Image (tube, rainbow, N blue to C red; front, side):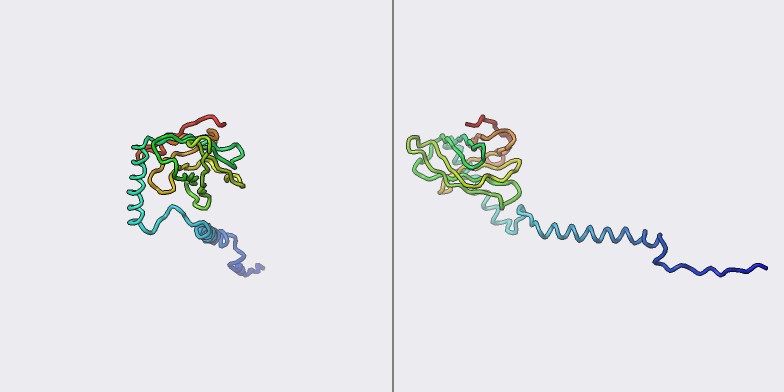
Length: 187
């Protein structure tokens, strides 16, 4: 006497292959939500909405670079080892009565940028200094720009922090300013 057992099918949620098939799409959905969250929390500072205005600004900056080149502008920038101050020695044909500014520009994060008003040394009109309370944020490099407050000229170069606490700024035509960095021993 053979009794035949009736085999009842298991519910779908007890089958391992069902969960295996659903795992892939579920992981993709979670990864997409995480990516969306990251993208909305950290907007890209490098994207601009007004290309025409940016184009006009580039032409104006080229004129400032050209003026600095014609005035033979150069500067040695020495950042203090604690990153809380700077000393700058400037040379060139410029109006020493016009105040100067130092801009420390982070290549990708606008919130880290600093604009520093420089104090002229009374005994040496070609030497400028500045102090600030908080050390510069730790980063690999900065774009260091020296300019007059009337926006007539500017000189800049890339400062790679690991190469020392100093950078040399030499007047150059726009586009060539970031090709070469100069290492100078700190003071």
